[in-house]
Structure formats: C-alpha cells, structure tokens
Length: 173
Length: 149
Image 1 (cartoon, chains in turn yellow, purple):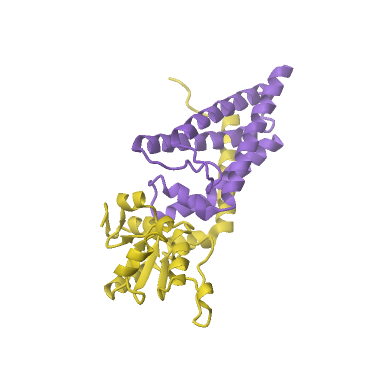
Image 2 (tube, rainbow over the protein chains, first blue to last red):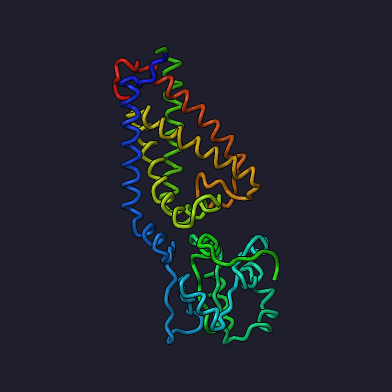
C-alpha cells in the first residue's frame, strides 16, 4: 500500500498557502467591508453614489434619486413605470417584468415617441446592469433635462432583481 | 542550478509577479465594476459577487508581491495555480454557454474585450509558467533543505 502522508516540506507549503489566503481575505474584507455588508443586506452598492436632488436647483443640475429594491413593487402598484436603459439585446434576453426599453444610446432618437406615450408627470424607475453601471443614471439625467419630473434610479439593476427571484420576462414588449 | 536554469526560473517568476500584481491592483481599485464582471458568469448569487470582488484581487496582489520578492515562492505559486485552474473551469463554462462577456481578468471597464476562449489560452500559458517556477524552485532549494518555500 502506498504512503499517502505528506512530506514535511509539502505540509509547510500548504500551511503557508492557507495563511496567504486567510491574510488576503482578511485584508480584502477589511477594506471593502461596507460594500460587502451593503450587498448582503440588500442595500444599494454603488461605485459613485447617486446624489439626492433638491427642489431649489436649476433644471441643468437635477439628478435622479436612488430607489431600493424593496420600494419598487409598491411604487409600481401606485403607477410608476420601469425603464430598462440597457441595449436592446440585453433587454430581449431578459428584463424586469413590465419594464419598457429605452437604451441610453437611443434616448435622443426615441425621445419623441417616448414623450407621446409617457406623460411628464409619470414616475419613472430606471435601471441597467447594476454594479456601478452608469446607463440608468445618465438616462435619468437626460430625462430630467427634457422635462420629466419624477425620475428614480434602481442601482441594483437587472442582476439583483433576477437573483432575488423576482418576476422577469424575455423578448420585446 | 545552471545559469540558464536560474535565468529561466527568475524570468518565469517575474513574469507571473508582474501579471498578478497588475491584475490584482487594477481589480482592487474598482471592486464594484469587478463584481459586475464576476456576475456576468451567472454562477454566484448577487451578493456573493461582491464578496469575491472584495477579496480575490488581494489574493492575486499578495501572491504576486511574494513572487516579486522571491519569498514563499511555492506557497504563492500553489495559490495562483489553484486560482488559475478555477478561472479556466469558469472560462470553459462561459465559452460552452456562449456567454458574450469580457473575461474580467484585468481592467474591469476595458474597452477591448477579451473573450473567454482567448483568456482560457492565456491562462493555460500562465499555468505552464507556474509549473516551471515550482519545478525550478525545487531545483534551486531542495525540499529536504526547506529553505523558504
């Protein structure tokens, strides 16, 4: 029968590798603990936090407000509209149930038809791919600039929504 | 150890050091974007992508620094070898699933995408460098002596 015990040198290498892994994890977690805590507690994780707007700012400075995943169902039930800011291929592959597509790259060309369908008083919840994706924020700034008054950004985006097992659908609506 | 072997050992060690210090640093600088790239593989639940993004870059970074300093070379190579094997399995999975994603190996918001298959072959090359570093290190410091790993 062969001897399966490890040599002392190999044991030492394995032990040092384990220490290396532990130290790296500890350092990484201590530097990024807020990001990890937010992710596991369902709070917004953002590379550049969405800023709150103030009513006194001029139109050019308006920025969309953030919205958390837990608030969306109630807002949609009250009439808010979900807008998918990702490209059309991503939208077709899967999007939040009931969301309509308005890719950031086509926002200007599709603005007129969007305006005809959606009144300026409508509450809009924009999302994209999460993880610091800027498309929904940029689209929010654009829609505020062209006159929409109640524009919100859901930063968790499609990945968080999908991974929480919430309703999604495929194809064009 | 002969001179060509010594040169080969230090060359492979330094290449690995530079690659993994760069890879770790660039990901550690933007963990949210890196979490997005991990999420593209559609393997982990949402929050776990952030846990990986918070810790993995430091594993690459510290292993790379040890290689650069020529200290604890075999433990560092072992860690990177296991990581690289995991990466290659994930890249094969992404290629088999037809995911049109950037591999997430280096700069999270890189404009030029590296496809999973391109990244797979690059990782295979790194794997060879790791094997040669491990073996040449053995020849430089025999296991019985147990100098510094």
